[in-house]
Length: 316
Image 1 (tube, one colour):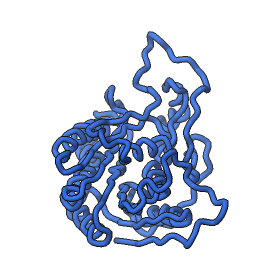
Image 2 (tube, one colour):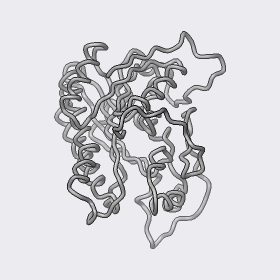
Image 3 (cartoon, one colour):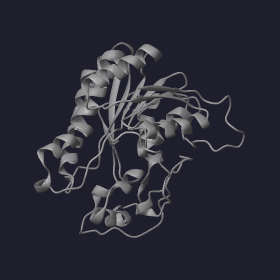
């Protein structure tokens, strides 16, 4: 399913814009693809890339969520197009990428952002649940990267940024996701090496605790813990979507032309703590909040976010 979106003739004078740290027009005339673009970090990245001049392909499984993001980008003067499909389905991936290449030409950038998991100890995870999380967080990203490479970047070059997570010390309570994310780190290195001769760079980002809409999907004990997560971060706060987006945009940019095969942690130093040296409470770390349409998760005190009426039963 494809829905082209055209921007208005001009953005209203005085309207808020994405306050990117990168120069205007950085990706002018280029095509960028963001998976999982209907919410959270993906939505933010799509906005920043569009604000920097890229035409952005917004993809996901839920048309309603993508349409809302596309409407925002269009209102801000950006250009984007919607592709609705499941990254876990190989033929759907092949078809979606073929359609975009036929319509727009080479894909310059891919942000493999789509992912998701559910909290559970290893002893309670079924094979079906384990397979579903691995398919979403690893296999789907592999299929997207492979097909973008075969259908476009193998001939024209480009940059790919994969999404992993802060799983360096294991991922208790989400072992299925930790295994998939560790696999993505290794896949990133392999792709970076194998595809370098085609002018393709492949990197990854590993966000820690980020104040994003995904936090509102958790319930029970996990939900109760979220407001206190900052206590376990040396910078004593959660990260912002804009801070993750800025790292992704840098890795896509010409400034990262000699960087490939790396995974950039965006976690405020959370894995560094030790009981032998407790961190001090402070308020010295100021967040970067360049995303003018950012929404605070309800679990952190934000207001409920209006959602479009559902027309299908698929989950994002």
